[in-house]
View: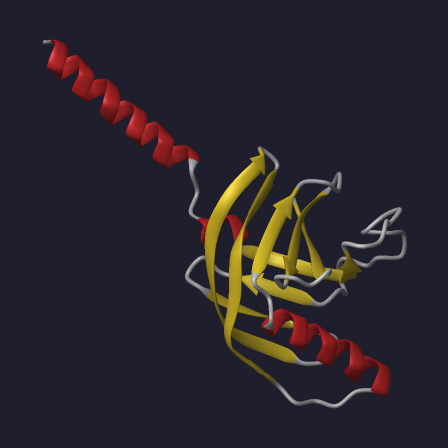
Length: 160
């Protein structure tokens, strides 16, 4: 009888743990909106500042099967990614590894300023090594993608 009770308790704990722990791809999945590139070396009053237009911001669509796509400033893009959990710093802040594979894009030209922003975006996206997900904005979930040993990161938001 005691063995049977122990078995049921362990089975329940295992099932409950599986329900609470979403795979990292499921946590990342969704349509993210690019806010800008920021530096860990600077202080900011806000990340999603007045004037940010969620509906027209460049997109990053991440699916749970390892695919990504979106629209940058001008061009459409698609590719794949690999992600893995590192740890949970606190309940509302997750981090892990993230790398973009085989990124392709359309080749529509824009103004020199648009092309510079877009080229920098694609360069940083392709060199991403880490992700951080937090809940620091009241109406948004935020995603930061950065490179190891680099103080710059791409900042995205998704409506909660």
